[in-house]
Image (cartoon, rainbow, N blue to C red; front, side, top):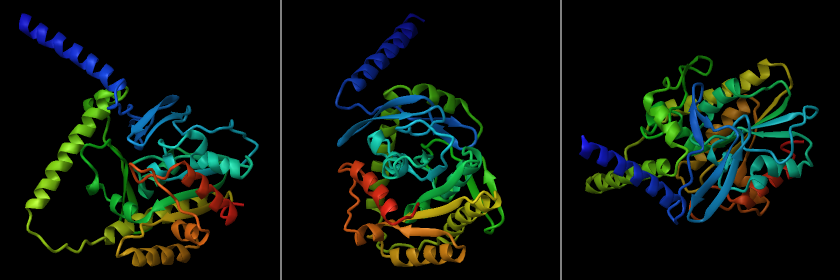
Length: 336
């Protein structure tokens, strides 16, 4: 019993000292920005601020009482809302708050609208459909602007592609464009409760990052041992159905409200993919068929001699890229 108490106390003190070390060392990770949410699976912590840390940035981020990236000006109920949907590129914790897309747009449009950022890391159009249904008040909305990363969102649409280490997520499964069912996130478990408690400490993302790095290392090692020289053809027909189904249902939802809400899509697409032209043509044909206004962001930026730059240590847009995207939206009159 005495040894058990000594081991317990020693372990507890070791964790405290390790937490202190992480917080005040070059190995700082910041803490988790998310917590369990019964409708989406995860959502930003409300009234929360912290730092996101990587080798090329250490940026303070903050969320308001709705769990949204904060606005630089107070909400004005006399102005129309512009709802912005997207993934971590749009959530953009690594960008200074005043430069994130919603605040850059607010400045470009001289605060004509309330720009509301519902971007959430790890989500695609299927989750964003549910976010629109469950999280967004559309009563005062003029525009819904959705950023889609074509290749990534295609692969992320299927629940089978979810990472076992990731937080739970809602999924939407489509049988046809008109027939679908929502697969809710799992009920909150003991694991989720513990994760939420630990997520306020530096040690939580450190543990997750360590496990992820080990898993990636073992996976790469396994791939090197494989003698496969040919790449199997991947059938993405279901992925395309889920992606286009989510867009179709989002468009249908907004039109059913009879509030003259304009739904517009900004498509990001990787330029180094062999299948890229086919993907662009396919999504273009679909969007034109249902009269959904869109732009291919990379193409428009290139035509305007704008390079959307990323942080050196990851692929996310940097501060200037967010400001440039806002300028593109203004100059092309994508929003008026």
